[in-house]
Amino acid sequence: MTGVRALVVENDSFTLASLVNALEYQRVEVVGRATTAREALELQRDTTPNVALLDLDLGVGPTGVDLAHALRIRQPEIGLVMLSTYRDPRLIAPGMVAPPRGTTYLNKADIRDFSEIVVQVLVAARTPLAFRSAVPSSLRPLTEGQIDVLRLVADGMSTQAIAEERQVSVKAVEQTISRLSEVLDVPRDSSTNQRVQLARAYLELAGKIPESER
Image 1 (cartoon, rainbow, N blue to C red):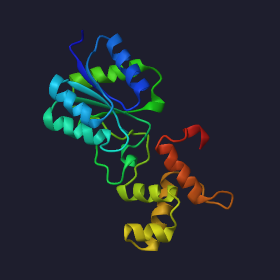
Image 2 (cartoon, one colour):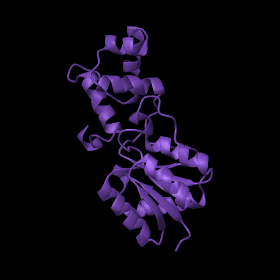
Image 3 (spheres, rainbow, N blue to C red):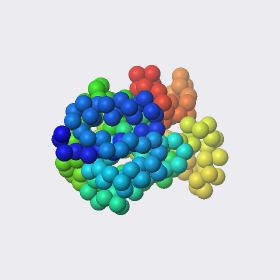
Image 4 (cartoon, rainbow, N blue to C red):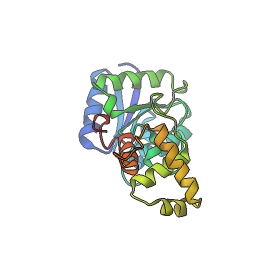
């Protein structure tokens, strides 16, 4: 055994089984497997893992980020690895806080083999508090306000409705949309619909459509 005791949390049963098998094949001791945040916290209390592999989207209720913070409150030096289809974890919910310090964030679309995940789990167990960026460096920087407007555009809301939702002026929303188009390289000409392109950019960042289809 590697001495690594892992807790695996994934709400898809097939993916959960695959992750557990991959870890155990590399002699990582999986001391708990869960599909919800509640189950995970109960298992943490009973098994005291030194690293947790978490899915960001756990369905209705707490997210993987919420769970990561709860795990850290109980074990300040537990290693954390997070998996997601979202390229930016802040897109999963309005006002999403950043993952805890040292969290390794992996996008499922970038994973070619389960062994890559196993390596990151081992690294996180050894250096749980090392600095790691939760947002991939390849992404364009977006503020919380820009992410919120982008989400609302993707939901099909009008500029007026977005202004009312965010309690700002219509001009402020228009300026944010214009800035988003620049940051996300959205074409602004008569041949394309700017809002449709922004909605597609949001879906791409959320992992709902592959980059190749954009």
